[in-house]
Length: 404
Length: 196
Image (tube, rainbow over all chains, first blue to last red; front, side, top):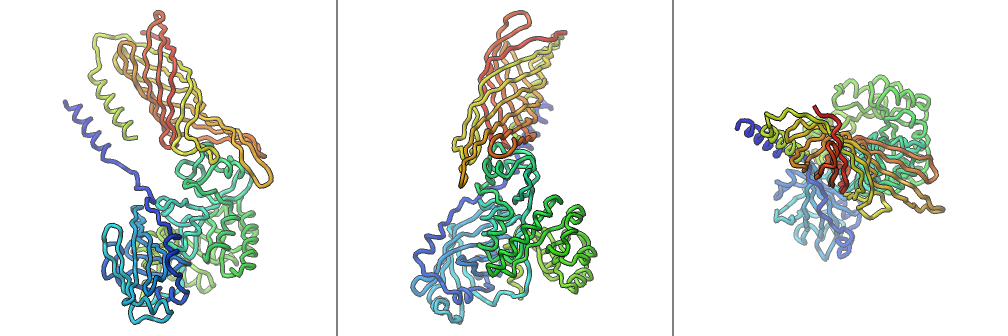
């Protein structure tokens, strides 16, 4: 009898363990059909809507306050309380402004649809006309009946700060239906509030460079049963012909991804995370080509930084130290010694002293850290350094842009 | 993994009552099977292949220590060809054709219960999964990976002689992480190699 009881208890314990995360996205919003019945807002109108909003109703969803800002033709709301954000589309409809979209809770992967309206008595006519309204309020309702009311209280904080999305978009890859290290995710990064992205570079057997994080292909990251095991066992044509990223996107080459950054985004920085020292010469070459291309496209402010995470990569980079912009994860002395090291980016576990930051800034270099996801840590680092790599760029945006 | 743990625990608990203290005969049996495989995939095998099923084949070897009780323990291995495909990929100026091959070798601990010729059991442990890609403009590429899988088997055998048995067997293998489930109807050939 005792043995049976032990078995039952063990089974109950096993039965209570369910490590699966909720998968998404299970909401689909046809933004194009939302755009169609409304008239697009002018850039002046959009800038009038950008700001920090007091959450009069709906604090259970967003906390208080939230940041609202346009990115292209999408309106984003960014919580500074947790990794919650909303993306919506729309424009003017008569003398009101109508927006439709979704709220996404990044940590859980769930989402709900939301409708937002600026009525004719809440500042919409002035915004549409491009003049500052006396007051601006947004009312809305989620699909499960939660009321939202936002009141614009001030401008967005304008201090420069680099918000970098991890693996192109952070933890959204598991919960948004867009794969990490993919071109669609890079396009989406700005909607997450990111000013730049960090992407991972891997070398194939035939010495081509692709964006991919893991050393091996697995069902977590790719579709295609014939791609298994180490990335370096396959040529680029095998990878591109017989596999796709987990959500169906083509696995991009480094050149394709950087070209997309230039042509299809306003991102200001790309951090190339390179673990393989043998990839460095080719990365430098591609970096040079893309920067030249960016210049022809008027994107001179774009920074593409070769990431140096180890001594091995540093040694491979040394011949190019005078020609290739870099980001160093090692010690501050090495960062100061490299003429083209633009950023020192140690891990958050390292103690970044005010003296280190001052020394870097005196040398016209910036200081980032990674990978920071906790609200308290983000707030702390934001006061001291110049940028954060996070899995939750929406949270970093909400915190940074809402500062007084 | 959770169902596997529960099954193993139940088998273990059943074995506590599966003793015939008077029976001190021990034997080692080797079972060999060869069979077609019908394989089902959670996701397409390749971007150009919309279907989620394939036909393969395999051989299986099982060595079971049968301690004269209901419960046997042993080792399970074999070689399964899960999928073979000829894949054409169109490029702007040409078309490439690849031959792709996926196979798996189980390296598993097997547990089974048997009575009156009926055996039901499962193998738990890794599969060594291997892929080979030939064709295109590149040299052939090979990849491999160890992945946890489960093999369920059920058979009925009848004696052909003192130490030889034969009968039908159905095997189901699950590579859950890779999203593959395979069904293998087969004929099994069993030999007592050691009795003491």
